[in-house]
Length: 318
Image (cartoon, rainbow, N blue to C red; front, side, top):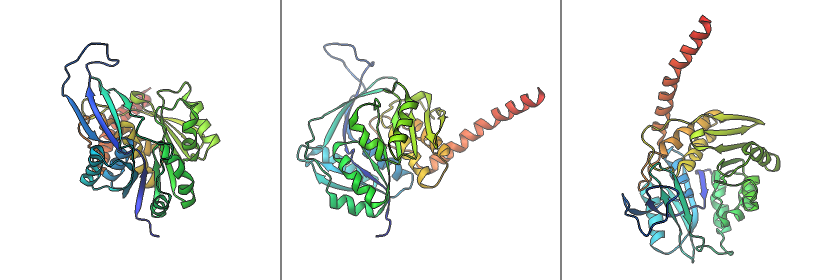
């Protein structure tokens, strides 16, 4: 079968209800009057990665379990409107939902509804096999049914990426994803020793690169045994919502990686895309485009050049 899909995204389709709160953590009170209100929209981790890589010009296909409900209609409309191929299997318990509390500084607290899943949930193996055979790469969200697709994906010969999000480095649930992926993304938020966890992922698994995002502190990249730091990028506009920033980072990194770019440059792509995502209001699902990504890189290089020149000149005079 010919390769028709650059990135096959498995899992992570759902709906978020966005609630803006005056502060995080939220102090107890009988009630709050909030602006700009409460909005429900399609867009969880798999949706955002699918949107991110598609906006960067990669041929994208998304596969997940979806309910026959209003939330499922929102998710299907999201993919249709964005032009993203979407294959679904029925989820009897309904489409995944979450509530995101967003503070004035853009930080968010996510509350996931854990009732919309069952032990028997599986993505159809024949469908996974067929789509994998037509794909270059698979990005696997860490939802329960996706763990069972990993042997099929490996058998198909596609490379695999995953995002462990706020893994603490110890919870065994995440390990099957961490040790089967070629590219592993995670957050430093819950890690006592990020470098130790990153190296453990490489030692116990098959990862060629591990990327740990650290918010305003940038990110850390482990490749070929060398740990390096990716500086944070100043957002091009005020920060309004950090939701989706990690997915944007992973999408842009994948864009560079699948185009054969050096890992350090892939990390810079990710930093630019993550910063952009923080400027997108929570009720929108915009993603940085390929032209915007490269234009922003040019701007950063132009901004850095004078500083480098001044440093070199000072060194020469000394």
